[in-house]
Length: 289
Image (cartoon, rainbow, N blue to C red):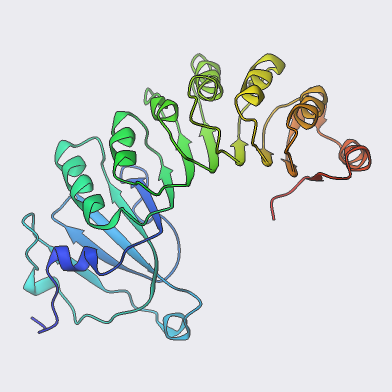
């Protein structure tokens, strides 16, 4: 085993990420493309160190390194290649977060490298453990949520009602159960009025919502007085709701409507152009930059 072998704690502490992803292993093995190293902690906890793609040496690199530790954090001498440091840009954890031992490892991991995290992505899981994760991210400002509901795996977004100090929030909700999807969408949207700590929220994106009523949006807008950017993507929404958003959000600077639907099809480019003329101080468009 190489003389520069790191203990598990040293490996985790070697990089203090600002961007961190949490991915349920039952849905994906690799959270995103790119150049990365894999670190295994036992059989059920893996994290990826993604390299800075702007670095020339990283861009020349093709082979990844995979480092393995046992449950106690001891390096596996048969599965521990030479350490080759590359600039790291982000980290991602892939595990089954419903397991108690994985939850314990996650908390230990965050105690070592969670203090500088400002942005997280939560993919394919929800529930009470998200609340525990958030407790160990004191400088968090941005959350991106991708959730696909499958079979009877109903989403649990209670953590939205505990958030504090968040500036940017992006939510994709892919519900498949027609009997619960409307209820879950309403719960998500109602969360903003049930939590008084969204006063710092400046950027909100809702994706794949299909049961948005004028009353629900009006309540949401009353809870977000400082919103500067509002985005819809693949959302069923009326032109009346769009007008109401513009009129009620006094600090709005950007409004995005990407692939949005109304009762007779997509929101028309003519409508968007009309809104641009009527509200020239707001950047209104149909795509995300």
